[in-house]
Image (cartoon, rainbow, N blue to C red; front, side, top):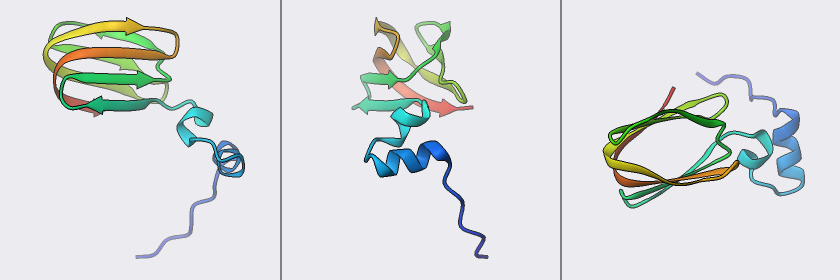
Length: 93
């Protein structure tokens, strides 16, 4: 069933016009997984829960849940997190 084409929001249009990544303009989190041992999260809003087997991160509109083994928060700035360890699962809620 074909629906109406979705209208682009202001931020999405601006990203297209200026050839910018939509995630940077809209403020949504950007995740980069390198193998199963390193996860970078940009545009985060802070850590909600932290443990060796589970880390919950606020991504603004999403909660990012990282499940793994020997997880460690290696670096954290206002814009980026670096998590190392064996990443088994990443989910958004």
